[in-house]
Image (cartoon, rainbow, N blue to C red; front, side, top):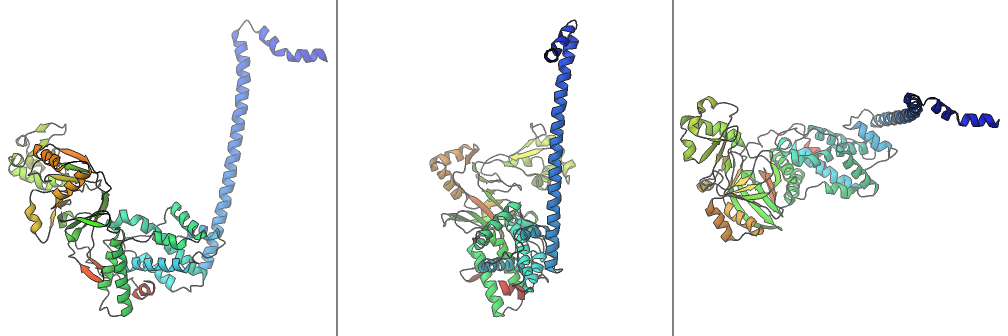
Length: 489
């Protein structure tokens, strides 16, 4: 027995010795052994992966089954009443064993107040339908609670997205289509509910602009009095209130209400500069937008935008190439080489959609941008700037530009911002006289709001402005139920 054991132990050695005549035998033995181990390792990994996949598939099947059961329960409870977000609602309420969410009466009242304001603006037919359904359902029923949550989901998405989508949503009827908010936002809301903070969460979605709330109060009181001759004025106020809700209180930043032709600069709640402005003409409207000043450019050159190049500059050059020199225009070809205006047959590019040249106007007092340019990030290449033609600021109607905002008191605005950056007024004057283009980063936070509001209430008085772009020329939508609006507003 002992000999057999020894023979077993030394068997590999015997094999190796007998194969010394060739390296292949040694190599084959170890490779074979290694391959077996690798195969066994791979098989184990594959088996573990298959087990994990099977567990995941089973878990997914269980979750799907739970979701289907929750949705069936939701449909049963709603009794045929449609909802916008069935899948999300089923998941939310199943996790709560279908216990009601809107137990905080103050939170419910605040939300319905804000939701009624949205309905009155006409930007969402779906919101109007939801509010009517809520109004027609007994408050003690679970269906009422679910309808509230359904409306609130769409409302959360609207509130979070409207600042960036204002131009599309707030200047036409039924332009907002309800969508599910981000999962993270839903979780924040449900966490607030669980911690008895639903009112605080609802309030966090409200506007801080006092003009917004003053305007809503006028709508509410007018509805309650029953004295309005028509709903046209109320509708216009409600629509403008939604435009106001995305503008913060006037504490810090530059605010340009486009139809007012005015810029107001606030610092720490104080108005430090008021200036007339020129905004885009009807064909080239100044867009509604939010941005921040990034730098001041002293003696800015003007890189002619493609639209102006095609519509304005090329036809003038086609008639007279000498227009380039008289207007201090520099022309560059596709390789960046500066060329003469006389070397191009401009007539072939009249009415063309593209021109293979870049044109820049040199800095100077006669530059289209004047002596100062105030840059801010913008997908529309919109910015604030000076102008050499200050007589235009004396006009009553000042929708005259190609979209950018010309500032009458640009020198004063530049002085304030340059002083923050450590410039003396003597330095500013020397740089201006040098004609050298100099960019200076903005030191303080200066948000810029370009907005469009034509009707609002301020200190109890109704304020109106001309609807220069025709955004308010909309009939009162038939889907607004003013009795329902009055009930909650």
